[in-house]
Length: 198
Length: 198
DNA sequence: GCTATTAAGATACGCAACGTATCTAAAAGG
DNA sequence: CCTTTTAGATACGTTGCGTATCTTAATAGC
Image (cartoon, rainbow over all chains, first blue to last red; front, side, top):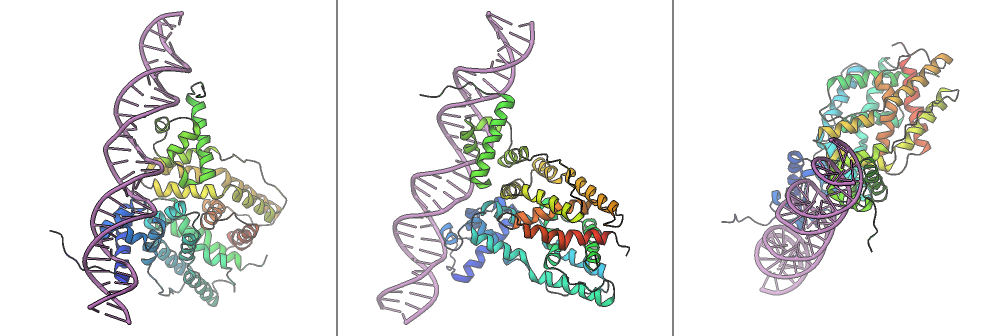
């Protein structure tokens, strides 16, 4: 008694496959993300997937990046430290185990595939985040909490790098203690130091 | 005409397997590190390897960590900045593509294996490095280049974290520009900021 | 030195997933 | 309506997995 279902195509089918891949990623992790399992879950077959993505890594990346919410709400709590805590918390929320596994798996598997690597780096760059940090710092300077500072690109990218490093190495979720540690022992001192004349 | 070779045992055999695994890692990357390939290269057979390591991840980790040189030479160039540049350069030299692939592969594959993860984290902690940083900073304070500062653990670990993050994301080797960028835009400002009274 | 124990090395297995080729029939387009 | 596209099914050979079995070499105990 095979269920008769109309045959999907194009965008609709593609999304169904990505959804299935995402489910698989969540339930079985990157290691359990097999093309056959995704095909079965999506109710389709392997060739359909291979027609669209060249490898498991490319599929995982597509499934994961499609799930990254834009998250453009501005942060403005009134003080630099609590702005930073909110910012880091937001970053940490995204940097969960699935992200870590996906990044790790893609890097291990597609090290030589320039196309896949490019997508991954693009996905990890996140300029809006760097811009949000810059805004926070400028507001703090306007309030007089910091001397006027031009934040170097690298310093604006640092929060994301720090949280990602934390997420990739430790296994469990990132704790509040970790976040306050990063803010109080690294990022706030850095911001103060950037405003200091040597 | 089979070459007749005396049958190796214990330490000698173990080292031969680790050497073969390392070779495989260097030539084919983590993705190409198969138990069968290692067994063939080492001139032994799969069960011999499985008797010693529970998984590919464990074997890769053992092969890699055995190759990490101790590198305990103290750094003392006379100035804080050049000490830091030397330190970061030394770290970067170790953080090559093989390390990145190995870390990524182990994380992706052995996410649930607490034993393997523990070994990896142990291997990445590197307290001697943090101590070296602390010494450099204290010497700079003695010279008056910095105000007296107690370096938080997290700040002492930061150099390694930064370089590792850099190595994992970019593909090629870490350039001198990257190192000077990290020192001048992140770590030196951080050290200045740590000595500042808020 | 003889003997008992340990472990190396060879081989063969069933299994899972790979990536590809082939075929059909359903959908979309003119 | 007829053509083009492509989803979906299936089957295939291949690779590597992890385990089991067997032999025989190396070692250790006495």
